[in-house]
Image (cartoon, rainbow, N blue to C red; front, side):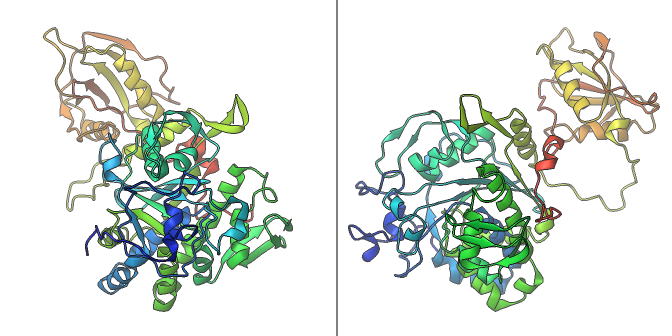
Amino acid sequence: MSDHRHVTVRDRRTEPGSHGRRGSRRAGGNGGQQPPENPVEYDRPPRKPGRNTGRLSMGGWISVGMTCVLVVGTLGAYKVYRGLDDNIDRLNVESQLGARPPETGALNVLVVGSDSREGEANKKYGQHMQGQGERTDTIMLLHISPNRDKATLLSFPRDSVVQAPACQNPTTKAVVPAGLKMINATFNEGGIVCTWKTIEALTQIRLNHFVKVDFAGFKGIVDALDGIEICLPEDVSDKKAKLELSKGRQVVKGETALAYVRARYSLGDGSDISRIKRQQVFLQQVMKKATSSDLLTDFGKLSNFLTAATSSMTVDTKLTVERMVEIAQSAKSLTAKGLQAVTVPWMPDPTDKNRVVWKPEAQNLFEAIRSDIEPTASPTPNAPAKPTVKNEQVQVQVFNGTDTAGRASEVAAKLVAQGFKVTQVGNARPATGNVPATALHYGKKDAEGAAYADAVAARLSGDKLTPVAGKVRPATVENYAPSIPAAAPLDGPVVQLVIGADWKGVRVPTQIPDSLKGDVVDSKTNPCQ
């Protein structure tokens, strides 16, 4: 299968005045103006006439469901996916991204939902917005761990004011200047490439793929799953959203499900943040059904679900069917229980009450995802058992072997934040120059010293250090006052960390920070809360 099938489309969808999908894709950010001489090419055959063309925000869960359904990537299912490939639009963005964060072992997918009202099937959701191109209210990052057994879905509030890089309008080729703007403006003005560049610049997380979701297939997907259960604390009557529901648990399908995920002012506190949380709960219910044996073992249901899902997405050219199956085969242990959804920590923008800015804690969340880059090693068969050592049991001396001032105290603070008991800091740089390599030391007579040092090694970035028996004598040393006081004196060995010129840093926990745990949506979240 070629990834570069250059197609000239000649049907009613490209005729002047047409609002078909092929024409509307090129109108994004340009109010429906005609494309320039060399528009971005889509690498796929023309769609069949009459395809439902609408799009809406909150489409991110479709890509997650697809990722999990791909667990059935056996040889037989592979043939099914090849048959579905023509449903998917592909866009080449790689050459337009510029400088990138480094590659990692994780899988990070940018998910964007489009709310174009083009086409007959979509104009009823906002006929007055026809001709205005693509916009988005939903930007998500799907992070799948290197072991492919856990996933984090990170939602970026659409009202976030962020520093965006300079971009190019995909239609007019005009330069979109860098500056402070709402995060969804990056998509409206610069297309998916600009949104990709912005997310990478803000988070320093390397993205591997993107999925842009058309929402016209939403009703078909929900119906293919026989509806999704929701729970309402009170009756809802929303004429604007065309939503009439009674309180309590119920299964929604079709237009009702669409209205439920779109509604804003009649549910929760009426904010976009509240709607994000509700959509994350909805996603969990989709995941449960999409990964259930009822779906995966029923070829008819599975085929209907995949057809609906692939009919409503655009992806990058590297996300081929072969790549999807490769992901599927490596993600067989990923289920709804392995998914956590969280919103970037935010607070009201001091200069505009209708906008939000990200809290400093957002960087901790991004760092946790950036640090989740290496597969967890399996235990070595027949290896001698080592004592189980918790961070809180380990006493550490941190010595700076470089000429970077303050590094020992900086590293000590990060180790304390992870529970280690830092007793002293100091300087261990010899007169001849920096210590070339970072090292962990323990006393020669400490029988369990290596196990305690291994606990520290596990939290350091870079190649895993092998602890060395025998301690060093620092040039200077002082007690580290900010350390967390122990309930009782620790009896275990004292480990020395000597920071060298090759220092890579302290690895932050690869999990959602404790300060955000109350905002996490997972398989245990009560949909009625």
